[in-house]
Image (cartoon, rainbow, N blue to C red; front, side):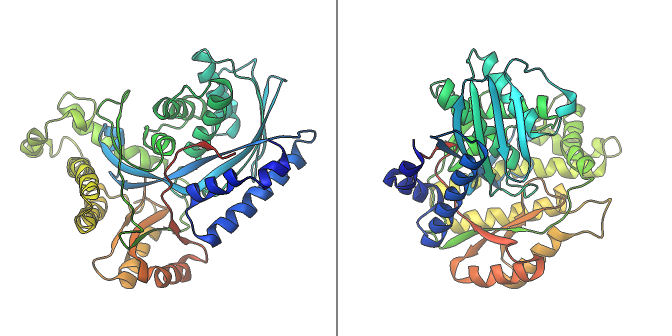
Length: 424
């Protein structure tokens, strides 16, 4: 599509409203953002005279804190914070990506093996996605892509998964006839992140980004997870979904993150199983006296969290399906306490003086009352908290959180109905 056609397209305007909601201020911001992206694309990739625009969402975890890596259940949603890409296609057998803030990455399609010197880079993600599609028999061709992101790195909103599903959507749409479904694209993203990028992860982040909307996900069969979209509108129920970035550093937290699944798996191994989802819950509780001294105390507590949180994610989804917001919020508060007391992922024991998440939770309760629906978001130890706030209190809540953590730290998220899409 030509540049002027994109600017004046009614379809483009309708699609923006679908992705970002109907707030005019928000839509004005997005129109300006897309225009800047278009201008930057044609500035960087000189000679291009047409383009397509894609968007892939970040995601928020609503229920099921640290359950997916034990093949448990989770409740997640795609959000309006997204990565957008302006794309054209070339015959040079090269994928060129300019990412705002990170610069150029270039991958020749003739060499797609894993490279250790690329681990942790955008280039690794590009090479991995192209390689996986080639393995599927897809003849991937050249791509020129400019992308810019609203999904803050380290925010717990899955910026890497958003980029992986974005790139998969571009390749899938152009070179695969759109044949890969959201689960397939999520798996490609996870493979890319695990093998090429060098970061271990489950499938939750990629799947939530790929599916879109609000979804209940059961990972009992990890190769064929059960996904059910939930039709619930928090806005109509009178609540805003708010997330606050506490600006905590994620440096040196790898050991904390790895310890959670490893300790849970240590309990599972006691029963001869791989993950806790395979362990009979009643047998676990009967065995606690025998587990004491064999596995760490924290591992036992984290296993208790898993068994309760796994059931809670299902019950939270059921409450929303039945339009029972109060029951959902009660379950959400129980989840918050469990993460704090049993899972223990509010701060790192290596840096006990850095407690941004407990501080944000305390401030939320001061602002919203003791029954505030607020909890750690995502992996934890540093990063973000998430709260469901009555709409009449949202403005005051944002002001108080911003006063503590800096302007723009707290914002309202809109749950968008789609995963990665071609906007125009």
